[in-house]
Amino acid sequence: MSDKKEVNLSGLRQNKGVWLVKVPKYLSQQWEKVTEKGEVGKISIEKKQGKTEVCFTLNEELAAMTAAGEKEESLQAPREYPFTMHTVGAQTMAVFSQADADEVSLEGTVVHRAECRPVVSDSYMKVKRLQVESVKPQRLVQQLDRAVATVFKPVANHDFNLEYEKKKKSDGKMVRADRQLVLDLLFSAFEKHQYYSFKDLVDITKQPVTYLKEIMREIGVCNRKGVHKSTWELKPEYRHHQPSEEEEQKSPNSI
Image (cartoon, rainbow, N blue to C red; front, side, top):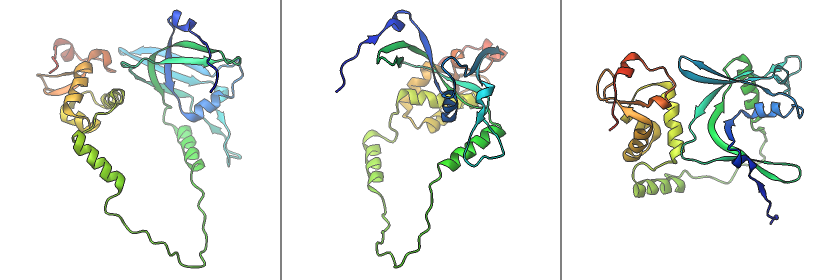
């Protein structure tokens, strides 16, 4: 086992807040081409119609990519990457760094989680196509001199399926998933539509009713009247849209 190392906790004393952002693999590979003091791009944070929009713009010099098979045609990585924001929830996460001298330092605690997703364009589709082609398995055609004697008989139900069915019966029809995973599914759904019936939310998350209602009471409200009666929506602090006049006048209560 390696020797114990001391951790520099100055970042904790300075109360540093950091963002934890998931980026595409090809984008991180482009970042690695930058020199020590080089610039990978810029982040813009703007307010539009009451909604905060965060976007990363890749440095133009890093947009040029090289790919096997691309001789005359140049390959350009997308430059615009809007952020999809997520809540940190009840998790406590931190970022550490390690210097050449093996000193481990605490850079700060995570205050925001996000995904850096490119704008769908011709250049993005081309990059994705090349990525898919690069991981395709190499198929080998081989002529057999004799017939294959091994015969695989079909199985009515595999052991892992039987084990899963057994677990479902013992734990109930639906098994509780990690809370953060359920939150991510819910926020992703509410990015597409503002209102959902509770039955639809159960179908989307595949979670037990009691467990899901507990989470929804924390982040959402159930409309008791109006056009969207008996549907759920996110609380104002979790929404990504501008509330309408009708929403501002009503005060829904969660059940």
